Length: 365
Image (cartoon, rainbow, N blue to C red; front, side, top):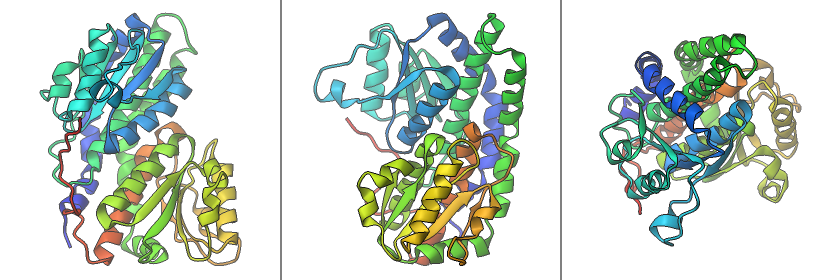
């Protein structure tokens, strides 16, 4: 069945290429403003998939820009009337629609206090776009499916572009590691649309069918990832919840052993994001532990060796394009996850374009 959700998943390479071509000037302008302002920390304002993009920002700006990132709590303003001190912050609003009043309120409060405010949205003319001092257009084009796909990957890429431009700004002013890192980072960014295209090609019908069969009709499952892929775990879990109604619980892999491990038993499905890099050894150990407990495991990885399970049977591996740096790999890793959510919904006789009780634009206060 052809769905809007699938069409928009497959539009991602073109959407990301548009952002790289059309968004660089706005990104560079915002990065220059960050350099002038010199924020002590970052506060994000987001909900839903955009909040998962903010989780990526927490690791991205922490690892690459040495900035502490706090996921904002809009309710402090809209419900409790107790806004936090934001005058030294970069307040970063992230939203596909830019319509939710609580997100707008946090950005407006930041600007009122003298914080630097930047909005990432697919509609620069939206209330969020008007509230921020700087706006980065996601260039994703109209997104009609309720479950976000191309707007989410565009948010990740826009954040990565901003982080890179902020680092380049420091290098041009005489600090930092030099220009080679900047050139390498920009080349890696420019390669992302093609890497997403390759990842789509790797998600063959047979691979998706095998992964969906491993999950089966389970009404609960685990989704695990660490570091940059903490965001991927949360976003994939959300996609599965939206499209199938199953209770998908996301965790950082170390958190599995602080209580949730008690849920694991024979047949429990677990999707594990295991991209090569600093968190890879941890993910591989978790895969082995889950398999030893009889869990039904689906790795998402750029390492094909993970197809082999310790017990001799094969994992239903969902492959991502090799050669993507770890800090950018959430952009490719979410793609087979999106397609898995789509495949699970169709296998259960559900319409992923009409999730129960949901609409495309959600306005919360």
